[in-house]
Image (cartoon, rainbow, N blue to C red; front, side):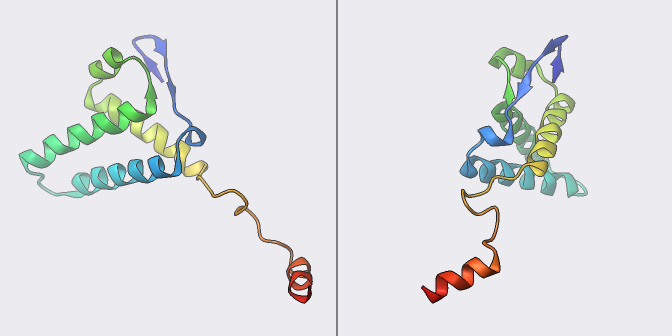
Length: 111
């Protein structure tokens, strides 16, 4: 991400634990819910800003003073960029990526 003419990186999905993915997913789901609210309350607007700050802060690899200067639109851009990365690279448990061929499964059962 380019901020004040300086390039900063986002954490990649591979750098984020499965539990952190879940936490970020919950933050994103709550952000979506507030966005879909037709007339959000002042408390929901404040919650939305805090959630954006939290989410963008967890995924943007930048000094705290840079993160603090971001406005809401910039934080949304960070969240959207990370979400797109996340959607193209989901975490999986080791060994759970492929199924064993049917003939190998049958041979194991006979043994």
